[in-house]
Length: 168
Image (cartoon, one colour):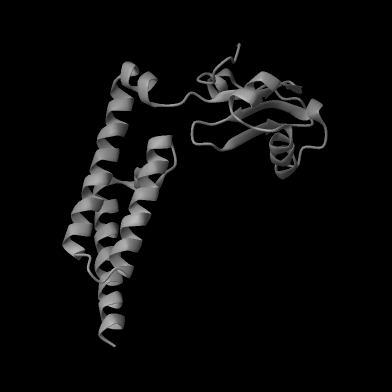
């Protein structure tokens, strides 16, 4: 019974702390905007699980660890916003996988993706013909964005402006 109470108290304490920390540092805390954000989210999840499951973990130590990870993530995102050098050094640039119906096989290979991965994403986006695809981007987060239309609307250049190998 003591273990059950400890788990319940741990869950309440740590989730209260993570809610407060998220309110302090903002919604980006759990956004997957970069690989660093993704790593931070995994670390936060690991700390949460460790504190809740491991009866030898100190809740205050866990809260401090969460505060440090999220604080570091906030500092990282600030530096990326303020310094082009820092952004170039530590963030991945989105990669163009398709443009105007043409598949860029070399970029698929560079991103360690198979053609079947791309086709799966096109199916998820309800693409019926490759000619409908204006662009497919392998985002810096690992997500794949598909821009398509049967009407062949032009894509505003700002949408693809930061994508590697995109030619306006």
